[in-house]
Image 1 (cartoon, rainbow over the protein chains, first blue to last red):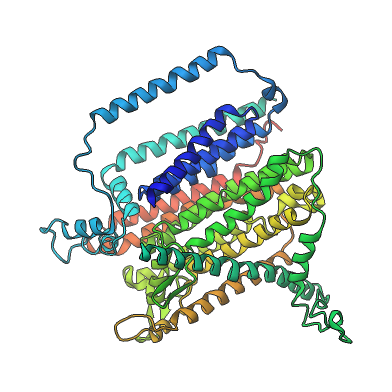
Image 2 (cartoon, rainbow over the protein chains, first blue to last red):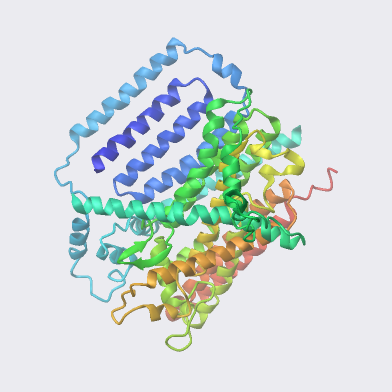
Length: 198
Length: 423
């Protein structure tokens, strides 16, 4: 059953991807990109990564693509539709994906899937039992949401991501936040300046 | 294989039951309720004639049951009307836009817990661990329907409507997401069923009292008396969240995408018959999901509250066989209350201007929600910090929050004023 769904969503995703390139109307391309993103999110969900899949939709489909569309709709579409593909752009379109595919093949060649274990209710229950026995029974970790979820045979992906980000990578997280804020403030400052001049 | 088939069948029954048997009639009757309630407010009668047409079967008089069959007549009319597609539209987008509005609104229903358990089955279609995020993600897709409708109509008024709704929904998603951060900090998780179970045991989030074991306040587990102060950030969360839901669902007073006085009919000017009806249904479906989310996060979802849920459990803490039905009724009652509240607001508050709407979202609610997160975090950290003897650090934190808030208020107050020297 999961395999059928995998192929279904992979097909949707690839179809969307081809649509982005092949369709002439920019709005149709944007719609194909949205379809592709949704297929990708479904693939993440199929891998038990609910949080990543939902973020994919929330950030890329729900926010980034809306802004893209916003801009595209304000353009003069007639000009775009008449454009012909130039040979140089087709060549670039062939070479760059080929390089990426080669890189992917290289990664698969060198990676070791020997210890791979599928996430099933049984494997989650096992990992709950394998929690470090040196942790005392009344410690915070035993009663944390992640441990509770494991006991319920659910993958506590949100809790684990949050724990990892805010404990081990707190400083990089803060720095990225500041960087994004700087970019936003810069954007606003630039647009304000243009307005004042005109 | 058989167990998988049975599971699929159960899920199918749940989907059909919750979407088509429960929510679609609720949508139809909230349209009816809207018209009757509006009539009451404006001192009119409203649609009270459509009843059982006995004259069709040779009776002497029709039986008007307070117009309760009006939704049926409306639906029939929408289906039978001519479906007209203007010649100047982008056909493909014109056709998929109504579906793109309606489908996401109904998809979000699948994570909402309608009740506890009936015959050992949880009354929720998909009990996933990222409930509220799922609803925000899928609901944000419905912006495409409206935007495509506006753009593909190839009409300036429609286009304005689409662009307005696009900007409005993106802006209010920010305050929507930030406003529930304090709520999620208290629950510590994103699974909506577990959130409701917490509220069944500790009292509703905004009325956190239980009486089954003597009077108790559910917030006291966050450091006794200090925990009570959490109620204020939560109340603010509720306020911001509710107002943002109004903006997200394009309801009055924020229905600028279809503002008749400026944009004819807004994004659906060119639409007729069933395609128009799908936009209409999508709006009401979004409203119902919004009320369901407010109820689930702040008013205990399906739980009866005040410790009454303990009466529906046996000695081992399992739900009684009929508990699911009681909870379903409680949930629907609360949701209907909020739908009526939405309608009441629509017919009482006048429409905002577009710049006022944007200012409210970006200048007022965004900052308020940020400050709210900080305040809730300080209150939650306070008990353990006092216990560890870090009172000085705590007061520094509180002072920092106050200074930050004051700065925010100052910026929000002054940012729009033009410098006088240039003027």
